Image (cartoon, rainbow, N blue to C red; front, side, top):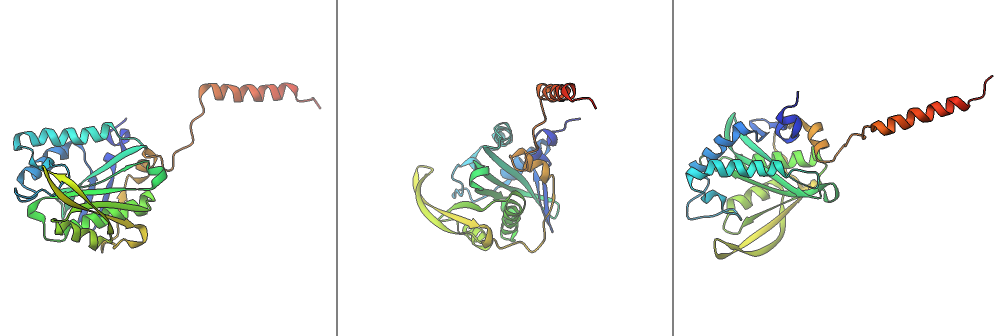
Length: 243
């Protein structure tokens, strides 16, 4: 019987490393994630995101969170995909971590993004979840590089990136809520990763790799191909000389 995870293997992914667990965002996690966002991610007078989704009014947040993740599922393909994970620490939901890419089979890289509930910030969890996702992408998805970005006035995010091994990759002046802001771009190469202290344990990786075009199984022969093969064998048998 087909399940959500067999239709979209991303939903069956689970990555654990000590107290950190990343799991594919199934429908039962959408409500709790929305509530976590409503409870607060950042100070109201500061915007850490290039798209200000966290300003969504509380009554609209559950629908917006659900629509975002449903949309990413609907558009998932080997050509362009996003892998979003709910993050738990010591069994408690704390935030989300994601990785987005286009043309992955060619470029072998993409960009990380994350958010962490305010009440769990300042405890090293943000660094741990970033190190875990990067180790997973390098070790299990054969990536060569990972990028990220953070505003100049977001030293906490930049510190997480540096602790993970990212290095500077340029600065861009962008529009943030109608005002100019400097966005620092950073990049992490495979050999530069600062790994988390705990080893990764993973579930659902073979199915996910196939879903993004890695380790794709050989195509099953069509009915016509099977018929042609049988016909060819019959012809060869028909002209085989008798002894």
